[in-house]
Image 1 (cartoon, rainbow, N blue to C red):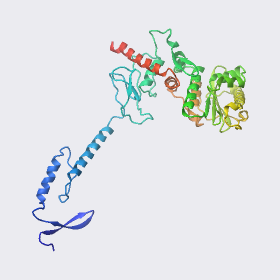
Image 2 (image 1 turned 120 degrees about the horizontal axis):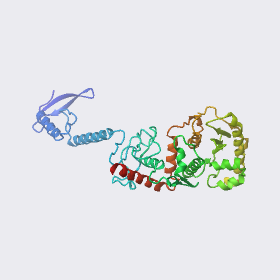
Image 3 (image 1 turned 60 degrees about the horizontal axis):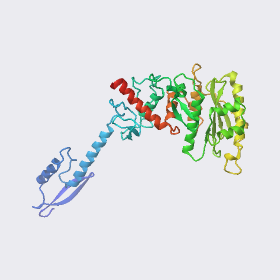
Length: 417
């Protein structure tokens, strides 16, 4: 039995019945008054009602305020998550989906850049889901295939590379777009990357320079050598000695060999067909990568591979490629020849042999999954854009500025006029 002024109250907590003493007196709030206080506190947060509270539970105003802040935060997060999957096209500026970190300023001056803070999703490795389209008013030699995803800077550069300049066509092809350790590359050199074009040696030489620059940048030692086409040309067609080749290419394409894993040597057969020799020093084998194998040329291509292997063996016998006094020098001439049978072949009516060589050199540095490489409709264009936009190109910044300025100038000429 409860004493005077005290009564027993039973309520459920966590599934268990609990009896608690509660004093009843003039200093104790009545049930009705406490309910009124709850209503007054709740009405001050008119945006959304607080979590329902039992009448018998004391009200903590600070806790209610904290709950409101949590709800506001969840509301803001939900708004961010509800953004569209891609950045909307800016019709006025022609700056479209897939922007880079450094963006043309909104004042219409593409040569001025600011740090991009637009949120991008990650459906692709760099956040792009759709590409920037080349406008119909920009005269280019061909249109970007639907499978190629370009950001804004890539679109400017692509349009500038393949721009059909009807205003000054005579000197248009002589403009230098690339300057690297190999030399300079003009616009007409890159025009061989038009769909159906035959890849020339200069494109593969610039690719070798770009890949060598990547090796130099990423590590203090080299795991791969990427030799220019002139190496195989001088050895096979002009009988150049190993000493001459070493003098010509040392410190440009040939470096310390303690950690060397692969050597890539592009070869031209009878000035008609490109194929690739890969010297794998880890697996100790010579791999002939040929996108269009031919029985009539099979033995000649094998002999060429062995001649190049012997030349490379003589070059790697020199102590200048090693820091240790007694290095293990490879006997490349004794490596067996390997010709993968499951390689995809190029279309017999295409001129894609140089593209196959470029992709094998670029994508099979750390693996030997040559059979997984595919030439796609955008492979040629990607090579062209990457050559111009890579840091090995000392003219990169100037070309980007000229390309973006040309975009704005043509827009004003054809659209705004």
